[in-house]
Amino acid sequence: MKLFTFLILFLGTINTSTCQTLDVPFQKKPLLIKATATWCTPCGDYLWITDSIHNTYSDSIVFINAHVSSSTIGDPYSGDFHNEINDGGGIPAYNVDGTKIQDWPPTLSSIMNFANAQFDSVIVANIAFNAVFSGNSVTVSTTTKFFEDATGEFYVNVFLLENELVADQSFENGYESVIHERVSRGPIMDGNSGMWGELIEVSSATLGTTYDVSFTANINPLWNTDHMEVVAVIWQKSDGVYKVLNSEDKDANTASLLQTSNLLKLEVYPNPTTSNITISGLVGEQEFEIMDLAGKVVLTGVLAESSNTISLVTLPKGSYHLRINDVNRVNVHQIVVQ
Image (cartoon, rainbow, N blue to C red; front, side, top):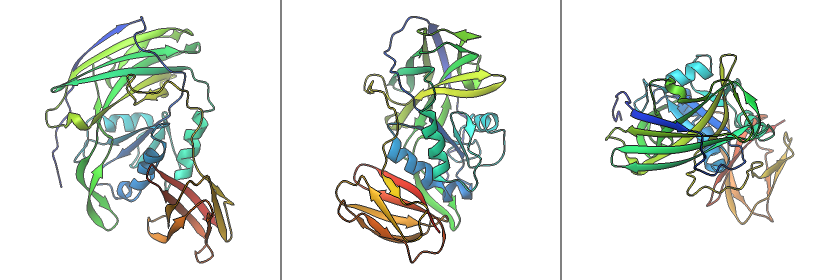
């Protein structure tokens, strides 16, 4: 179902200052961007990977579904971002903090390994924001704080995302109606720094320095502001390359200021395995399913603290994805049967 195709026009103004107005937590949130489209069959076949990451790690990883302009729910800037941070190329493309994940076909483990590695990096800076939607306009106030001295050009921008968008998505077996979440509606544009937002520092930033940037924009009346979210991003440009210093998708009025040091997840072992796997960290009963790389479910069952072993002896050798569902989140792990 083609909902609409139109260009996204943000008619906004930006104000900057260097006096801190929002508390900025000392924490790191990697930014996962998927370049995608509704007409792209591999994008549909691997849709579950990024959806599972967001469902499981939404408190730790910021996720943007960046539909290119030719998608029925696309925006005219996602393609530009894709070409810039992924060196062009086809879609889907998965990018963490400005670095393209090169593995193909895409795997959950490669994306998660890169995201986890970001938590071991130095927290150079972070950003906090407060967003106010009023009618068909939005005002986003941001504060960026540096926790280390840093060199390069630094930019702040804000993305608007829309949830619960229903659109036909191409899969291997044809088109299916799908609810799309966290669809990029483009960054707020000021006409000066383009899609990268506002230039806050031209050469170097000093530990303890803060920068306030306020964005105000009109938004398309066809979008449902009740289903919209905001993502704030700090970009660092060095030697012509843009990398993400940090990102945030929780409003400062509601976000916890506790540092997130790592990702919480279940442990699956041994992996690789020749027969069985054991899952530790279970609480209560949880349903599971195992899928092959084409997304076909090959095994299902129920796990519990006292019954946490799965026999894989009936499966051919190869790679699979284990999905464990409970009422709060979805855990997905790549497993290998040898």
